[in-house]
Image (cartoon, rainbow over all chains, first blue to last red; front, side, top):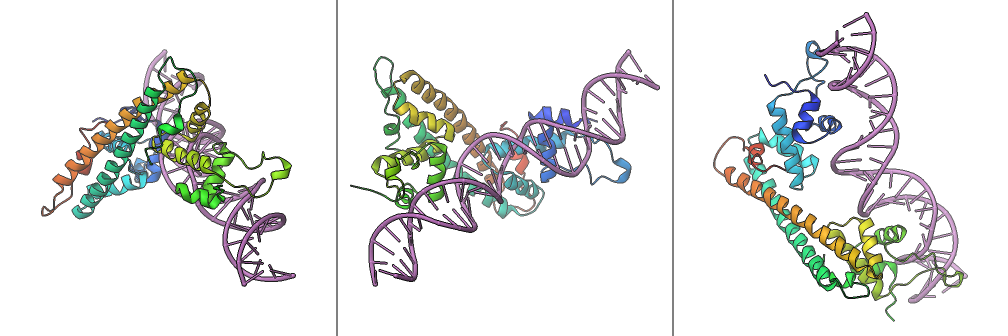
Length: 135
Length: 135
DNA sequence: ATTGACTCCGTACCATGCTACGGAGGGTAT
DNA sequence: ATACCCTCCGTAGCATGGTACGGAGTCAAT
């Protein structure tokens, strides 16, 4: 069986050991301690843990907080489809807003880069470049 | 002349008074203290301060840290066009990466919402919905 | 001249998400 | 069996970006 050490688990998802332990404390990953007294000591991890850890990274990249990630993980095993859809929809709306914001910012910066082209002397109108882009 | 109080300045940019004072401490906005001893006391603000404050919000929305915002504000009055262009270009690259990431996350969520449509029973495959989207 | 709202200022506190430290014990290669 | 590295665990610290508090002082209106 693919029994990974905590270091291997961490490496497999591109995080540090301390981060894994932090997620355990936060309840995002199964905590070693609840094991029966017979199994106490060094814990080993399987593919499920890796999937779970990777999901955490992906969800975080999507802008979910760790608290929301915890809820999503709980929902994954629950029957509450409505709640899951709701969270997805709400996050999609937020993502659309954020993507638009970033695209506006990108425009402002590219305007700035153009106006600030090589050759000309003097300062660039940095503040002005953002004026038509209300945050 | 349009002499604003700190509260009016803050309201005009959609932030709180404490945030304005925080930015002053961080050096992003002119700090009242350096005024000559004769002018000490309550400070008033003009349109330039409002523009500056709004710029801070916009730049923050673009993903700049406050430290970078401080540098941008300094650059706005400097002659270092190369540095300004460099910062703009680097940030555009980061923005493109981030926008792509968010779009991938959006896809995963919209896949999730579809698979988790109303009517069906049982849990939704939340973790699985992100599996093809490496963060 | 007193009230009440606002300002100034320092300092403390908060949430989020890690990251580091230190000591005790386990596992393994030599 | 002796290193040596890894694990476990609690606790502490850090970076970012604020937010809150409390005591003065200031200002305008009544």
